[in-house]
Image (cartoon, rainbow, N blue to C red):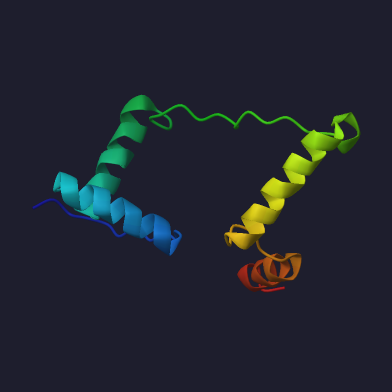
Length: 101
C-alpha cells in the first residue's frame, strides 16, 4: 500500500454531512473523494471546476417603487422568520472567536 499523509480541513458540519450522504450513495469514502479532487488539481494545474463570483446587482432603495421596496422588505422579514438571518451581534461574536480577538 502506498504511503499516505493526513490532511486536516475545517468545514461546516452541515456541508460535511451533506457531502457524506452523497458520497455514501456513490460508494466513495470521503478520503477517496478528497484524493480524487487533489489528483485533478495536479493534473489540471488548478481547481478542476470553473469558479466565478455570483452575479449580483446592488439595489438602491431609491430606485425602487414602493411596491418593489415592500417586496424586498417582505423577503427580509421572511428570512428572519425562517431562521435564515442572524443578528449582527452573533456574527461579530463568531468572528471574534474565530480570529481570537
